[in-house]
Length: 226
Image (cartoon, rainbow, N blue to C red):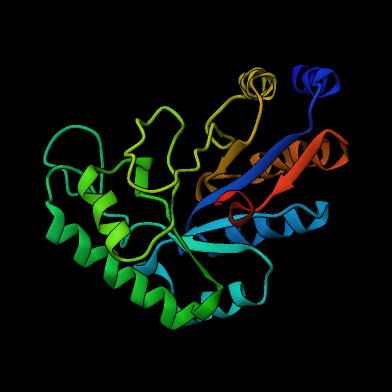
């Protein structure tokens, strides 16, 4: 993380950083391992929870942790006939999308209660304007996608910039440094389900760097939703 450290040392202003882990409901043991890594370093973590994949056991475990919790689609199912995978893409219109979002919202509220933030992360970070309109109608206050997605202009958006599980260490270092230089907030995305032991170790090393540096201001998504 040489380039990241150099950028942090040289930045004139503190940099806000938030952390989002997708696909809670799958690979529970890996999820709990990642949550533990964040706890070790005293850093906040927001979990994008798949409503249809959440069971009573995991819900109880999540309620006992200090992570932020919000909705990640409904079942993380691809409905596109062609093109890139998407649960809330143009293959389905407003009514079908709204029905799934509402069902997921109801399930998360039933299992997680007031701990659920009114935020929405679409699976694969993709959705349509119909999705945004449904979110507004259902009372969601924040949409989180990948930073290259064109804003819908319907509700506040909070983008992630880096996918720790998919970037090689050198590329992660360079990209993270570039986003620090551009100013925050910087969104760091995890996918615990594909993280092997060595990935967890590298993630923990990154978290240690960020936790120790006085120019990093760790934030929850709720802190940045206003």
